[in-house]
Image (cartoon, rainbow, N blue to C red; front, side):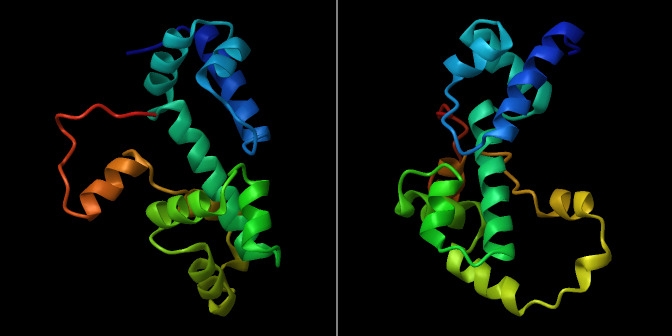
Amino acid sequence: MSQDPELLRRLLRAKDRMDAASHEEWPVRRLARVSGVSEAHFARSFKEAFGIPPHRYLLTRRIERATALLRDTDLSITDIAFQTGWSSLGTFGRTFRDVTGESPGEFRAREKVAPHELERVPACYLAAARRPDLTIAVSEKRRQEVGGTNGADEMEVT
């Protein structure tokens, strides 16, 4: 289903704001205000335009930023958690593990010993290759990993 170009521009405005300040809170109400549409229309249109709900998009951006900081800086994991928008180290660690499959500390340790053969690869390609795959909600992914339900009859909460 194609969307109105003006609506897409409005949605991109909200997406750009999330990209620029992914460490901030971005409830649907605030994003809808940025886009100049109702909350329900924003949430529905964003998912239709970009393939994932706004909350999941924001989570992807936060994880991307955290992985870059873990890889490229010596900041403490606590500092990285707070700089990337989490208010709790425990929530950051659990979510990071759910999305990437390893803890922030394990990720950092692996990246430190990995050879840096990727230095000649353009940054945009590396960013795309390292982007977390969040086609399903983190809570659903967690349920699947522990052998829970497949979620077909459950509603997703974002």
